[in-house]
Length: 398
Figure 1 (cartoon, rainbow, N blue to C red):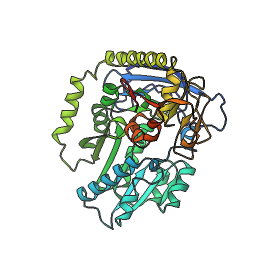
Figure 2: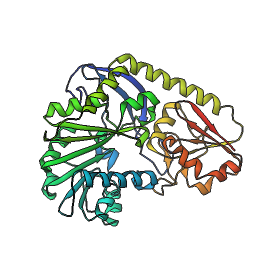
Figure 3: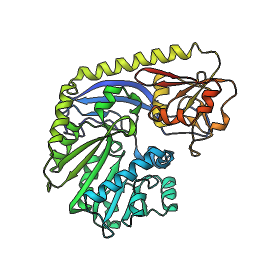
């Protein structure tokens, strides 16, 4: 479907600012290098609240019913959610009588540290293959979307979390109303989303793909919850996914902290409420495409990629990187190995498959670049150069 109203403020004043053409679904890893269905990857900006959102909305079943992203693969994410659980338990006085619900719970990564501390948990996850992983770990998980029908299976919750999923939902208004039906009167809804300000500043365009239908700023997320009658009482910046925000929402029981206004002032000073900012962002991405492709075209030797993340699909399809450029992409996830990066014909292999004549490795999972390099010093010893295609091209060699 085509989205013609703003998810945050419901305005019809939408303007196309970024158009990456047609790309396949970023996580649609296939068993063979075939052409896939592709969809327009076009971004609208709201002229009223400057919310950034996808124009074309793909059916959730097509994206999430068979999912290949497993959160616990990354050690840094396990530590992130461990720290978050400790904070929430202290902040909201959670104990063995409390219930924590996680929407889009994946393999249960955010719920494990609560359960280990004796707190009741339940996850809701639409991908059956991922649900099976979570339940196999002992995490109670309901397989389905968080719609009104699912509420009958869940007790009243003290805390509802939605980490890296709030941007994935088109009908976010219905989901939000369902959250507050299931929350206890003094409960809290905690959201983690990639922060649009950091996306613009760091030019992390590869976080844009069809699963992410909305790209939240503090202004747009406050506008959204204000419109529904709920209260954003606190916002924190966190370092996941190249820069994110953690947003705390309730029924209005808590006073809004001063830092919420400070975030909005910072966004205003960064020209986030100007269409021209988004046009310039697109131009910068196209300049990066030229710089990287010019460099890769002059390499003698085998070049491979590292990290078959969804952002790798966006970067490779937008930049035109296919199996004529990269011989393969290395990834640690067994769910992705021996499949192909969507739309490129590039196979995904384990690290044991790195060819002997490899001279360069492009780190496509750029947010884990330092971790990947640190854990692959043997590749540096072989004379391989790592390329990190961030805001500035970065080269790491022995």
